[in-house]
Amino acid sequence: MEFLRHLVVLVHLVGFALLFGAWAVEAFGGRRHITRLMNWGLAVAAAAGLALAAPWGTEGELNYAKIGVKLVILLVIGALLGIGSARQRKNGSAPSALFWSIGVLTLVNAGIAVLWV
Image: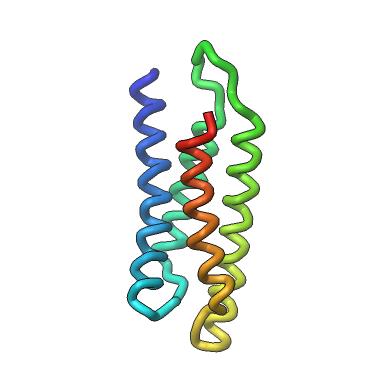
């Protein structure tokens, strides 16, 4: 069971890597567009994160505060991706503040996962 949990953790990290990697490519490439890969990364990270929030029979208790904070940040990232995509279709590019917020919040969410014990 522990191996399966570690596998889900890996999938969760790959989801965040997809989201942050796609964002970084756009940011450092100078385009600042929201891509479909960012949405896929968010979906993978969210699905794996929800699976990790289930009790896995571990001896310790779940950190519900951490799970709640990460879920709220994930929902905000999803909202920013949706709003940014809509404005990108309308204006040709995503607003700069929205685009940079996606990257910062993704990094904060990954940091919370690693640093909050």
